Image (cartoon, rainbow, N blue to C red; front, side, top):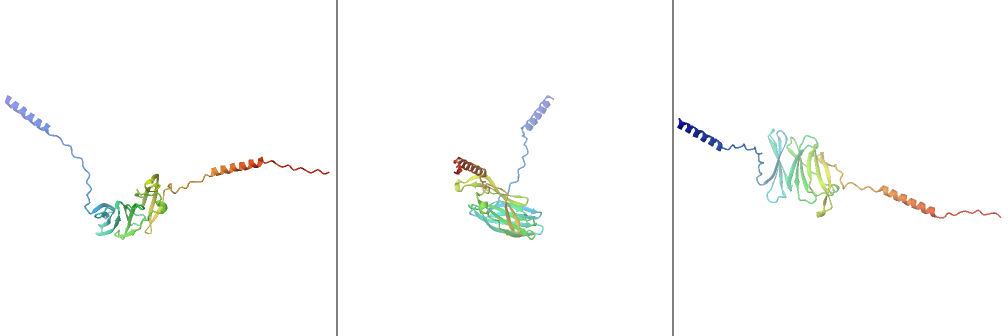
Length: 248
């Protein structure tokens, strides 16, 4: 009886020791799926789904220099089983791609923003409107900045879509060359589309458009002071009295 008791205690102790030696592992936190890496010669990819069955894959590709290359817009119409490709030369690297319908005609526009090293136009926009069931691409000429819009411009553009319009903001610099410093003001432009041509409207009133008003009160005061001086000088002159001649 005693031997059996000791054997029972040893078995229980061994079982407890075995259970205590096992570490409880916490379940691993779910990790976000990694973005698939692009294989050379491709550099950029973005998928835009306009509507169910209508999608656009925008890619850039090229070997060698990073400042040049080409872009592709691959349109997939899975409902009609139609697939089309639009290509073009690319200056710089693609920063982002936007989709809009600025003229509200039901035909989507694909806008590709690329950053170049040009000292005049730091940003290039490649714009296309797709019609005929979103399969035919119509190239749109994006307007360059005018001389007044380019005044103080040194890049750092920020594009975004707001209420169906393409918005553009960039900081304004004072000075030229290496001595140029940010003024703290921003210029905001709104791009629309009418008759397959872009319209541009400046929404901001920055320092380059504001004219300093003349100091009208100061001129008025100067005039008053000059009038006072003239009146005082005229009053200081001796007055000539007229004498009547006596008749003899």
